[in-house]
Length: 179
Image 1 (cartoon, rainbow, N blue to C red):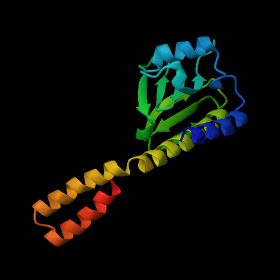
Image 2 (image 1 turned 120 degrees about the horizontal axis):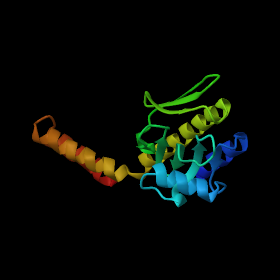
Image 3 (image 1 turned 90 degrees about the vertical axis):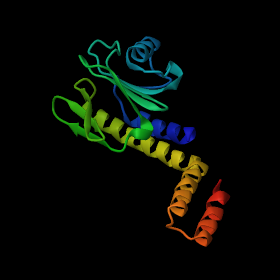
């Protein structure tokens, strides 16, 4: 998964030409430290993949921080918030002449007038590609967990009389083989 994410980042890094959208490892240390300490949540500087610096003077104390596991956002005059990549279902971009807006899962998340709107649109595409990669990896990584959950549900169905003993035994063998 890490290789796939790095490929996505490399593709978009070459397309996004904006001094306010920065990619690791080319984020100036002071900006990186400011962003992580101001709104980076529990992630450290080594977890950062990309940063949108949403400040006029470039101190990166407001903006959007993309890490390996989450999206951290701090809009000016708002409290910072964090969203796990695995919880993102939908990323939408709306660009206007004066500002760009990112909406995630139907909720306004990030508003900016500093980076170019076209580059924020590309960032939204990149975020969608990374989220899709994370979800594909998560669904492939835990088949045994989903099999365990299915076994519990199967047992409940059997105990409640919805399955015969033969049906239960047959389906149980299939699920046990997936663990």
